[in-house]
Length: 93
Image (cartoon, rainbow, N blue to C red; front, side):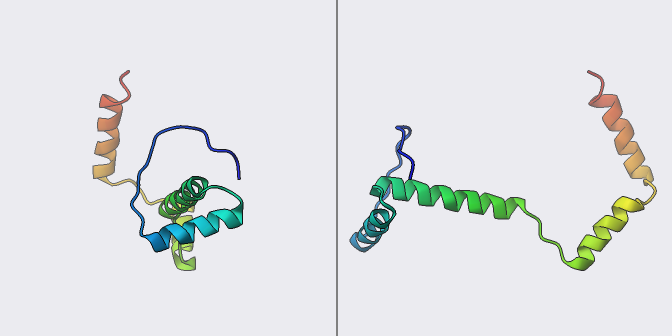
């Protein structure tokens, strides 16, 4: 476990049972309770973000996406108007 650097504080209230459980886990990992809690929270945050940012498609969905990329449909009048509006307003600068 890498050493902690000082930064912002985070306070949490724990039941005695949870605190003892986390102290034991920290000792098994060879670190402090703070290091264990911060490391575990970081791992959970990274996993949550990764799961949120990852799209899982079925085989049929994957095939539909690839087909649409390989053979895109003709743009509709609405899409043409939106593109013209974008060019006129956003790409001026």
